[in-house]
Each structure stands twice: as structure tokens, then as C-alpha cells.
Length: 314
Picture 1: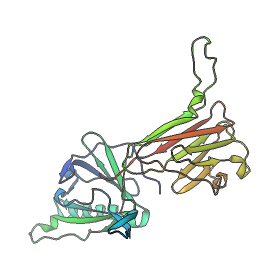
Picture 2: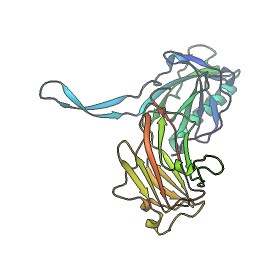
Picture 3: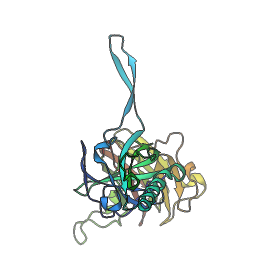
Picture 4: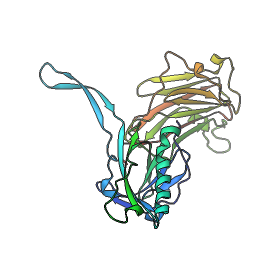
């Protein structure tokens, strides 16, 4: 399911979470509705001391015994994440309290029917990271022996995250396009920007690998994407699906995880890849040398690569 993105709303007041620092937190339910979780003026707020699950992802290690003692690491498998998020809900009257309690419960539990919600953490420096969540349990309340307990209660939520990594909602974009050739000395020294459809270096500022999305804009007859350091590559051939060369302005989108190739009208172009040799490669943290080669390019030809950096912690 696509990650929900939006223009950032004003952040709720920050709360000091032990071992995490000051953060402002907003939950977006599957409909996109915003639920500030650290703003007491809403009638609910986060109990910071009970928050957990915002650190590095848990992993499962697969090892093989070593004949000389010890073992050797064979595989590292990141595990799904669980986040514990305590919320205190209150109201000036019982009716107001129940209304807020029911609305929050509905906003979280609908992730079991309508797809994941998004938990977004914002820092005072303006940076944001989010993670997709499903409600698991906790909205049964804690109760209280206090006589005014019908005006408040606490929910200790457990949120299940299929993908354990936090994501920067601001996408990184690399754009390369064809430039009209020009004479080097007429009237001044110039270099064609068409050279940009060649070798370049892409930086992934995150902590873990990302799987980019590519958008190809014609004209082009054959497009080759190569990760230069490993030699992995894939080729998009429009004629392999009976279309012929891409015309000026026509677009094809390639997603690398899960593998998907779509023409601009939504038609399936998976057959345009050079299977079985195609490798839809990822970008590790740091810098990666890559090459874009567009055969049959001309004015308007372009390649756009987008990805959202992923991080171990909030």
C-alpha cells in the first residue's frame, strides 16, 4: 500500500520521551484524518513514561556452527516492530469523555479493516519520520478506583508495524534529462546537458537500503539502468510489449519493491523488462554510482528516480 503523504500540519507541542527526547507526535488514520497525540488541549495526551518501541529494529540472526569454535553469521532478518503508546483520555463531562474515547478507538481499530495508519514523529529541528501501524490491542482501558473515573481513562496501545523501519516523508529525487547539443565555442564555451543522461552518484542519507521508483519520459527506444559498483542492471524495452518506441512525453514507471512496471495509462508493462537477467537493484546507505542509458533519446527525454530514506530509529 502506498505510503500516505501530505503537507505537514503545525506540529503539536513536544513531549519529552525517555531515551528519545522531545518529540511531537501525530497519528493519521487510514482516511488521512489527523490525530495529534502530544497536545493536551485535544482532550487526550501521551503518557511519555510508557512509550516504547521507537529504537532500532529487532533482528533475528541465523548462524552456522564453526568447526574451530563459535559460529558464523549467515543471515540477518529484521523483524516486525511493536510500539507501545499510552494515551490518557479525559473530558469535562462523562459524555464528552466517552465521545473522545470512542472516536480515538475507531481511528486506531479501523486499521484492521481499512489498511495501516501512520504514526509520525516530529523533532524541534523540523525533521519528521513516520511508520505505518496497525492496531493490535490496548483500547480496553485501565479503569480507576477514583470516584471521578467516569471522566477519564488510559489506553495502553500496542501498534504492530509490518515494516520495522522509520521513513522520511520527504522524498529524495534525482532528475536527469536530455539537453540540446550546442557548439562548444559558439558564442561562448558550452556543454550539452544531455551528458547528464550518463554516470552519476546517488546518495542515500538513511540507515538502511531503499528501493527506488523510476519514471522514464520519452522519447526513448531502450533504457538501461546500471548500478556500477555491483554491475547489476535492468533494461526497459517498450517494443517487448508491442508498443514500439516511447514517443515524446510518454511515461513508464518502474517500482523496484514490489516489482512493478506500468505505462502512463496504468497498463501492465512487466514484460518490458529483460527477464530473467533483470535485477531491480536497491540503494544501500551512503553513495552509489549509477548509470542511465537512454537509446533513441531526444528533446524531452528524462529519467526521474525517487525514494524515501529509511531509518532504524524515530
